[in-house]
Picture 1 (cartoon, rainbow, N blue to C red):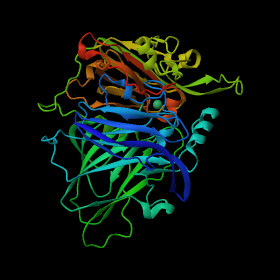
Picture 2 (tube, protein in one colour; picture 1 turned 45 degrees about the vertical axis):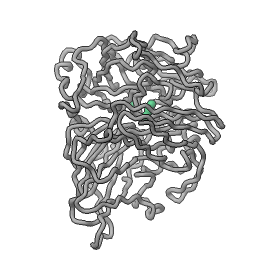
Picture 3 (cartoon, rainbow, N blue to C red; picture 1 turned 90 degrees about the horizontal axis):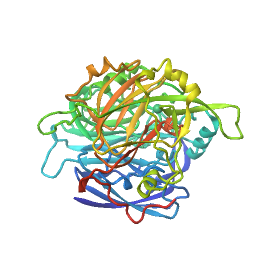
Length: 538
Ligand code: C2O
Ligand code: CU
């Protein structure tokens, strides 16, 4: 079914949080932006009109866009930005995704205020693999800076260190009642006793894995990243930037007011540690407490709490929801993820070093013409096809790679070309330069199976023996543990040009990303579709 959805007008609008009013980039003036609703396999056609004073692209995070990278919306990877006064019609082509995805700006740091949820319902006359919910409730975790974010971003790029931290985290655009200024605007979820709510949780924050809880209630996780999972009963989730989680909340507790709250899992850098809150309020006659009880969160820096939750995610793997994990691979790629010290190349800072980030010691530089167009039209000089393969022998986060990081890193716009239908395994290895942090890695154009993960160095003999090739979760974001590794598998059956990057905004801005070019296959339905006529020009 085609949904001719709407117009997204990119424009500046004033919003006030924490008693600070500022003009910010929005869609249709809303912050957070509108939620899109569609059914599995549907098509949303949407016109982006840029009425703002800056360039923008809009990315449909987790939508695979089969054979149509032209609408992926990635700055200088799949398109040139939409300039002020211009518009671009994007086709959001859904295929097997079902559950929750989201959309966000993909230019500099504009995603801090330009984002929204995508709710994907089962096909008509089909149902959920769990009891039917009474209502869908998008819950977006976000962030607020009192300062102008473009200025924060500029300062961060010039400074060479971590960015200035935001002033609050948000639930559906509101900091909550632990921040004196905004109490009356705190988001309220009104529930009826005995009913079931499907919460569509999105982590849209810039740089943090978040914990999320609802006071007095357990809930059941039933999906992540636009795919269903085996039910997990839990009282908290850990969610990476970019990730979505579907969870069922039963309103089965004594009618009262309860907190819904989120707080960072802090590793590396300085961040706001006050939780953001919303309330779950039962409808009916009762005397609510003066203030609900704040749920107890796992300790800061409790990586076990984050990893343990993520490791519980498993595909349904049944007749109705089969898995298709490549049992063997044509190509194994070893990718180290590092935060490097690199010499500054600008005349203003020559002789000093600054923090940059890399994959296999290449710090990604976005070109001036998008890679997709250059590939499609055979324009040379835009990118190199020499993205390095690391031999597994040098794949050591404490020794070999670290030594290389300090001497061998370089800037580059390098791609890895894959033949159509290659089965690929990528092993990500976090390195411990600068103490090490997680890296929530995200791949455009695909979902992948997360087949294994562990701490320390990847062992290419012992570790594959522990892979889950039976019911691994199907995801498009996965937090690679700090100083650890994660292995993913996918079949390269979506021709196009696809970005893979860390979804910590500070890391991707420092260059932690690379690009896959997946070639056309021979069959008529195995080739990239032609571009639309209104592709933005560079
Ligand atoms: Cu959420 Cu490159 O994307
Ligand atoms: Cu990272």
